[in-house]
Image (cartoon, rainbow over all chains, first blue to last red; front, top):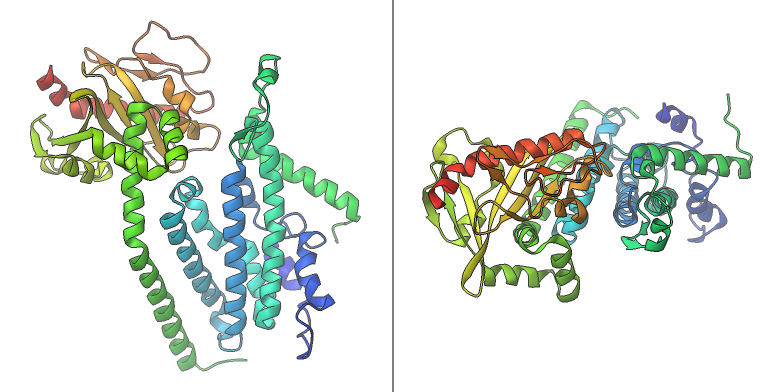
Length: 227
Length: 242
């Protein structure tokens, strides 16, 4: 479903050789996915992890960084190899490279951020199947130069990051009254009868928050689904 | 463009070797760090069972996580018992090196090893810590239970899990949930402590009943089965001791 829309997406023109490092077009590679072409809210990719890891801010932050790192590096590597990868096996070659990078990220987290890797558990491994990563490789990195691909990956990674961080903000605040593990809603509110929204800690809460974000964003941008 | 079959095969081979080599190199290079982190995590859990998660977390955030490992060195001794409650290996190193997962999966009696950690305060054993291992709703769950010297009263308990539902079953790692076990009896005759269905009931004065977690009955069944199974595993040892 989601890959079809990507395939239809127009691949940007190859940049002129003398183009400045941060030309207007290149800036758009980074800024477009933040809003008008957001991978989560507009392209509706990477929803699975957006629902699964966002119950607290801290692991969400790490997940956001991990996905951004993976999408930037895989974009650059695929872009460097784009003329060497045989078209008949390009998907499996992309998958192999993404899987290698993700496995390295997983090992680094285990070695230097053990507690975080414990709380993210299987979801780090699942970055491999995050449609944003494969989508950018197929739609962009296969046809563009490394620097453009790096910017494009950064844009998509940041676009994903702000959405999942926003979801986590509301889920942790309303679900457990905390942010980054620090209590925000005072004890006095609870004694006065305030209760945490139990639904916010479940993935259902994430669905509701992501729905509201999509609604607000589309209302603001006047985005309409094409038929 | 269409490449020749030979090109495709060579490309695949090179990609496989490069990716595989890179991965093997990173895994080998980080192995010592990961191993020591896992060891420290185990010690952390044992100390949390004895002193309570909140206190150990406090020590870790004030004095660093390594301090918890040192406390383990200072206060914990241990040994390993077999299926009949007999001591088969001495020393805390032996107890630490037992992997509860392997014991859980072991078919032969000789492969079943049950470590016992002793927590000493001023030269006297004030708590025994036993590991727990079982299956929750989605994946494995584990934990450590600290028993008072009477081998019955629960001084503390910790749980860990791999993939229980966040906010529901995953709450077994919360300090307030684990605190519900404190002061209960692990067993009384043949009956074993059991988490009840539903949440919010008062089980004071009922040493074998623990308040449950609403929305997490399946995980709690796993916890109950795990505790039941491990009570059975250690029963010969308890009988020998008392």
